[in-house]
Image (tube, rainbow, N blue to C red; front, side, top):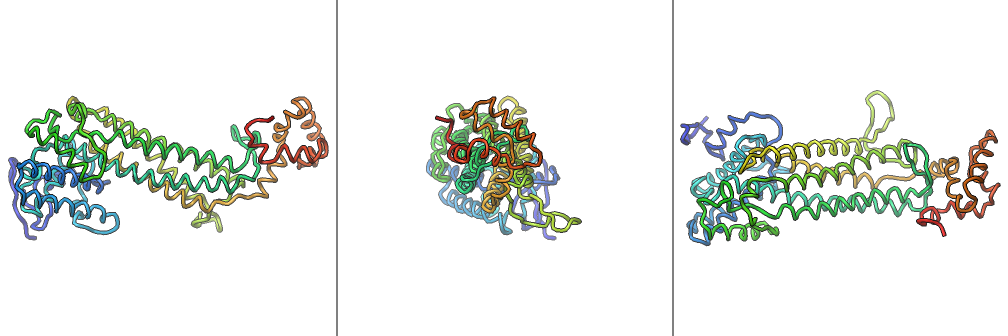
Length: 454
């Protein structure tokens, strides 16, 4: 194999002659032979955008030659395009895709990976040119925020579609009376549409929270260099570079008033992760409810695959189970984000790579889960005859008559029905005792959902 030699202050390293990266990435690949998740391509893309913005700022201020800056801008744009394509096809990032997310150095290896990917294409120096007026400590957290904002926007779109799917079911099932369940036993009546309306409202809150929490990520520390003081960077660059980043990304970013704070503290990521956890909780709860409704026969879930390797014809709620497992994983990732943020020391968060990996993974998982559930929900059907049978057989429907007949008479009716063995349709019994007109009016969907009686 043909090789090339590169040198740093630690010595010489041999690399494959066609390796798209350099000595810093090669050492990282050797130092961190960790299986599992590589650095997210969304983070590589965000870092490339940061490099582009820094080059534009240095070019405008005369700190970087026009030809060098233009080369960085062009190659950074190409890297962004490659990162987007890597979701579905092999790209120039393939050779670097083994760089693990769980790396020491607060993200230095990932920063240098991007520096080297661009430098090796342009013939520039990965530090003198690509890292000019930068530090991993301001570049990396800024890139994590950019990648997270894009992830939040994608998630918000998917949750909006999920909300819409359940709102359609709310309307579709609005005419079907059913029994509520408390403590997993029959409770007072409502409509099946109201149950699905409650699901839709939960997703509506997720959509709003996801959309709003982007604000927590718009304040960046780019220009602060190593500890937030801007040491080694010109003042003019510090004030210009975030403007260039806004132009490059199209995002409403702003430079932090206190760059030392934003370099040292990661609590904004914890807040955003908490929003992700809330969405995961709703997915877990609602998917669990859908499994129960399916089990007791009120609804039928779409059959998507054979459910058993031994039981012929068995169909399981596999989509719901998959979404629930995603919810559990996101909750675990929230703990990781929280722990990483709390482990930062003094002027840096050394555990930002794991934090970034967990946070961005949660956003991707939740977006996928929302899309899966929305598509699945479109195939949910109500079993109206079974809902009617369960409704008419339940003694709890008598609660709806309390405003008309009072608690004592309602209790007497329940006891009288119990004494007439062999009867299973409590509604017919009530019609005989109270009259069909009163029963029909009281148990109509309109009355059950009227929000109190007049």
